[in-house]
Picture 1 (cartoon, helix red, strand yellow):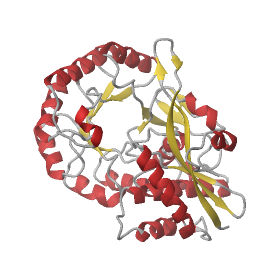
Picture 2: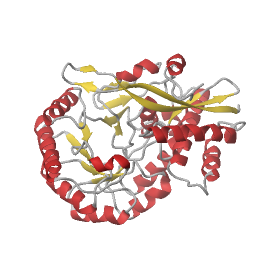
Picture 3: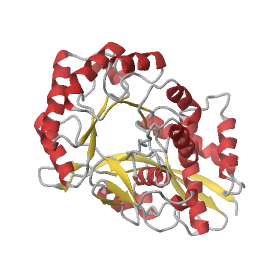
Picture 4: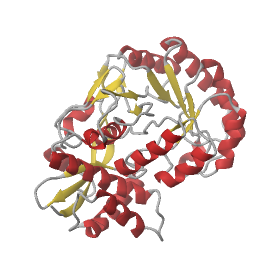
Length: 391
């Protein structure tokens, strides 16, 4: 079997959003980047890269067309070799970020192909699962009013979920619109965040896990002040308190707060997690399987973290392949905490996949179908493709 082509699909499709007013789905669209790896035997694998901006989505789509030429003719069984071939081809341009995004999409698709060839789910290819259901967490509707946040959180708890994550300080600063970060926060915004978390804690009770996301946008003293303000509400973790570039700033926050720290969605490959683990800078790590280097890489990162007794919780809240790839990878990981999902109800994805995600309570259950366990609807994809990207 040989790889014949790598095709990026940039599409606009529904994103799950829970409307607690009538307990139904309000359809909001977003962009997704899916990666199709075709072979000369007709077996196709699917991956995902979905980024956080139109610029990033279009950039990786353009690069994938050239990377296709690099891997055409290769045996898709040789996942490790292909991973390194792509990685090293970008050495002088930068081997993290866009590079690992590209690798991730192809790597996930290759594991999908491997599972289909063997007739097994990906989760069975790593020694078998250590748990039947993969624990997950989700989000309320961030940036809504305090009252709506409380109602959303109650609705999440009513589904059987046991954990949620929110950024209580959204919307972001006006000056961030052009990428400039002051690192500060107004007193009004700080107090609003405390009011949100206080309300959520009262609504969901003392045993529910509340995770706080700072989106890496505060300076050290602001992050310390915010963490201390939320400590009375028994928050489960404090995520990305400062921008990812400075380990010193992260250590400063860690040394001055009494809440667990989580980092990792903007950290790529096992090498970038070495200083985080060796310097005890985080209690949890959260690489994204579609950004850090795919299933191959996140499994290696998980094993590294296991040696330090640090739980891993993939940041996988984009599309259905993102969620499934993280779940398959984590099925056999002893030190797994939870896989991130965007909402408690993900049935908005059903319109473009052939097999609904099976979420019950606070777990996602993997099917016994081979590979990832889903296929994308090509007709739907072709009808929603953007900018000429797709098959």
